[in-house]
Length: 161
Image (cartoon, rainbow, N blue to C red; front, side, top):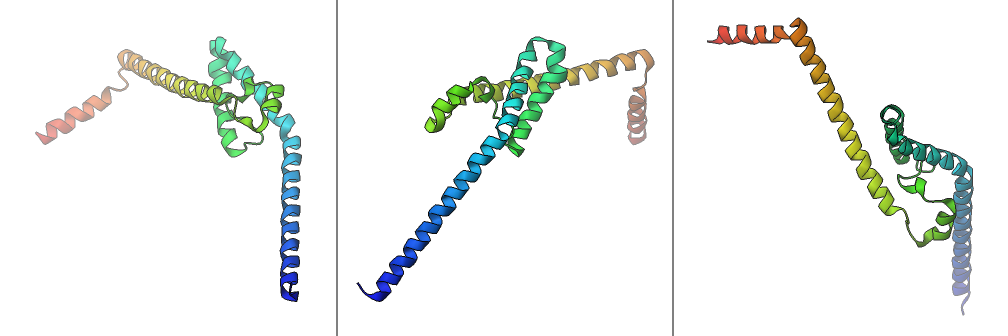
């Protein structure tokens, strides 16, 4: 083995050693970050579970539960270390630890909760629109407040023809 080959092998070994050291440091940082954010993640998961359970109280769900679920889903996209994905709040911690890297055990719960959230958001939006339309129609019938749109239309139609 020549002197250049030996120097090259030593440099390669040093590079590998540095890469392994960087990998272990990054793995340690991830573990520390997980440990540091675990209490917040558990707390927000409990709040999410409570928000879904408030579904049985219509007033509590519309004014507290559904807005929190939407904020939690949005928060998961911004800070996934603090907010669990939808569906993960129902899986106990012991099952998460046991499953580990085997895969997402709550994938079907996640899909069901996303579908339920979208359907409920659309339903609430439709209820709000129908309620506002009903209020406007009642005001128009009672007071004729919105009749000026018809007057403007008729005047413009008369001016054109």
